Length: 486
Image (cartoon, rainbow, N blue to C red; front, side):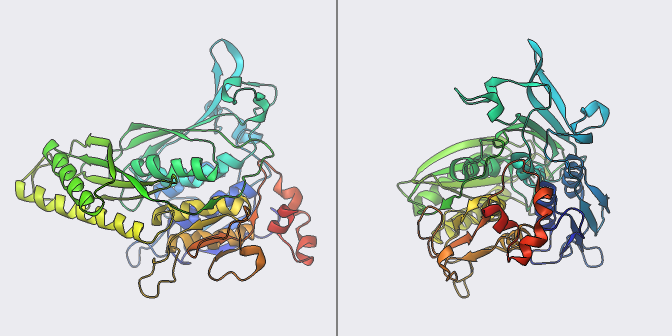
């Protein structure tokens, strides 16, 4: 790994997916590991011809928060910028040192919340990320979560941490200070995870299958891009990993049988919700007559232009795969709150058919994750110890049946390889003995993508101390992965 004083790693923003995913992951890993990055052609494959790319409000919000958290020196951190240099300082951790340690009222990043009965007892730390537009809250969350989980989690010097945050019988010092992040923006946006998807798929999988401490998410208000734009708000309660701990390897394998389908319907008016529900029930039972169906969300959106359907398949082995659609086609409406009978029938058919068919295609590939969870797991594969593998399934590319990873996932693979020095490969192409099985001794399935040797990132470690010896390690044929693996 390059030392903080060396030239930044150059990342071309038109690589592979060429959008915001590359930027978010690069800045997240840079802030965490203190490896400086220089990103050019930001979002170079997005936007209209001649106006492509650049930082939008949601990208800028995440970048500014991370820059403040790690006290990074930046160039180009402005809206619409297509080039950014991001050089973190040697301040390590979300609750440690420098300007980021100062209270929000003093221009810092964090606000301490104290116990009512003990003014010296910190029960959590809070931070607020505002956006004035309904840009995706969850793309911002995606960028900052690894940094919060893996950064130095000690409580501030001279203060106390409430033992209620620790597991029974454990010392409070074994745990990170609980963190509450409030993000303003959009909760239901096109081409972005919805609140329901994050709540029912992403967070349960990170906790149950990856081993991340449970994240408690609360919807304060909806943020919509459709209809009259509205800015919403979501609060996340996050517990950082224990200090000096390493995320163990994990394996997503043996999906199991589909036992339940969770149906979330957001629509207006009530007749539209009822029609969607009836169509979903008929469509699913025609394919899976024995499956149990649940309806965790059945919500009035207060505007007929806001229609969203999420279907989540739950398996006997605890995996969840989801597909949703925020309806984005023009509606023939009498007003913003009413639709004609003909329009209702047409919209219901389009919405339900697309989501049901998309979910069935996901389930047909036999993997443990859907297309949109793939790329969310890559950073954790790279940071974990050992060889973490995820079964993507076998028919992602209908032309030759060999392509497993989505373009977004390949992009995250590339960024992680550039910054952390790890390597990803499919089980079918791995020939070395080190990649023939995961760290649990299990043979990966034919559709698995494995991080052959995660960097084993230790929570709160001072990477610049290790980086000082990087040149020696490189001469000996090793880099960050080899050093962390010793």
